[in-house]
Length: 392
Image (cartoon, rainbow, N blue to C red; front, side, top):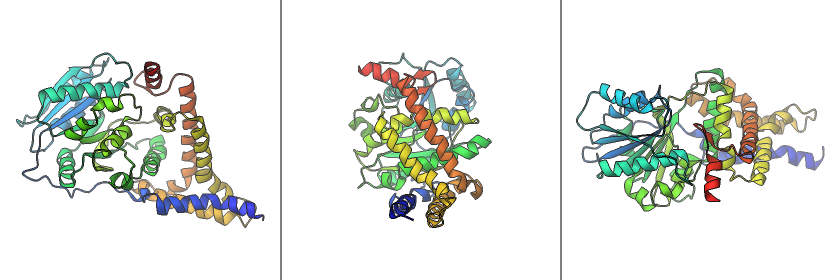
């Protein structure tokens, strides 16, 4: 066996050695614990901004959950109906009527304006929501930026604010727990979280000395003064991966915190393989800065990290097989905590290379969509093309 083949076979093992030891222990993340308790003197006013476009069927439950928060302070919920065609706004209003009023929490529904040039749809709606929140809740110390399909448990806001106040964070963000009901979701969704954690190690995001900034868009509690300091939502108006863009911008103003949610869940399902495919193709190429070279590098990197280990394991050369077995075992071991978080069998772990192949092909498809003017497809909008044309 030549030295070249030995070196080549050792690449995947070397990659996983680095990932396990020097990538912020991303693979060890656990859902947040309930150790943060709201103090009597730390209950500032909060404004929640909920952008909603065609969310009938889930938005009522979301609004109900927000207005039923046990948070001792005042919460103003601003829902921005982003030109929905399915009665989203009415469902939200009807849901609010069913919530027992506690004298502090209230709902405000506004109709979104036509999408402005240079803005992505969601950020344009969020920007309008923040402006309305500043008008109706000028004393709000934080903005809870949350999606119209994210359900908050009754103690969610109290825990978010307690963490922000006690840790003096300018942003606290939680990766909502996603649904894993169907076979496609069970196979693909835990890996989605695993890949996100690998790309944005939460420990690095939480480290004020590390430059990495990121967030999970479904649940972001942002200090109002920090948002004002960066110039508001307009500072990231054209970002397709808006949560991470906001996380980077806010981290420049002070420390931020990112973790896995224990009491915040997504109501949106991705029951079919095509649903997850569309989720990935929407923004994967944007993550690569629309660079063909980075796309090629990404594909090669995925091949070395996930595809080579099983190939080496079944190699006819007995001198190479141990390298593949070692890398494959390290890969499966790293994936086990994420599977445990989603209560999935550890037997899924060895099949991560197949899941990685799915994600790699979807990333290539994301580039093709961008090149054909269909990038950033979401809620009927090709947002990448809209932003590109506006900037031209």
